[in-house]
Length: 355
Image (cartoon, rainbow, N blue to C red; front, side, top):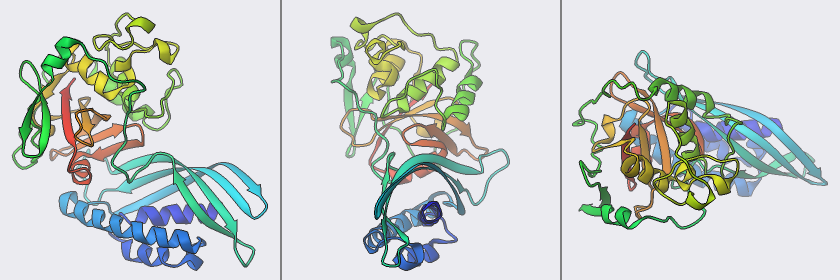
């Protein structure tokens, strides 16, 4: 079963790369070759068409991916007669075709799967279904608040909006979170002024170290992206505020406790973190262009443009030619190109922070 799982996940990853896509589309159409059920083969053939369209878009945008390497680690196997359930972790690298000296050579991700198998007519196992626990193909990783976001009266006054075409963006009380320009051709390069307040290399180092294996000194959340960013900021010197159960909803507090009930919403909620970082503590400064991001800066996304920020990421590298590489949790991804995210999620609203 491990061999079937590995082959299936390698084939799936190959669809997004330029050199093996035709072969993979043929493999998905043949359940006999891949040892998967006809139903799963049909499902994967449909998904392959969408992935191939994304592949062509990425190739036009930034060269896409040249090849994929997949490693599968078994976690558990349960067999019950003609049925089996296998838990595995997929670790994959998607290699970039051309890499400037010093830039990351690949994007990588780590994601858990639950695979179910059934016995075929020949007595061998057939892969029947694949449940991805951290979806790599949906609208994007989302951090949902466990309770409604609470803001003060002053917060609500500052949350003015301006329209740019069909998009809605926040406006701050000072320089403003202007609609973010995502045109790489016209975006100027910005560098952070020297500061003794924070250790930015520690922030990046933390993200590079813990993007896949969480720091056991902290709990993890079902949607873990902002929890991960708060940890990276702490590693770089951000000090927590005082606070406990009664203050945990306050957007001017930021603290981690032994229990969720003694941890602030701003620690692990993307929307709440925005208000603490930008407005109340002024530890971040809004940028009006995503291509101004540099290492250790933070990018947030509102996938549905509903006015609630869903996801938080950290810049782990600014490339020689201006490409920006982002790292995040849920799913666990390392050195994803900004241009790839903009292509995959064209309808998202973006909020860029200078840390």
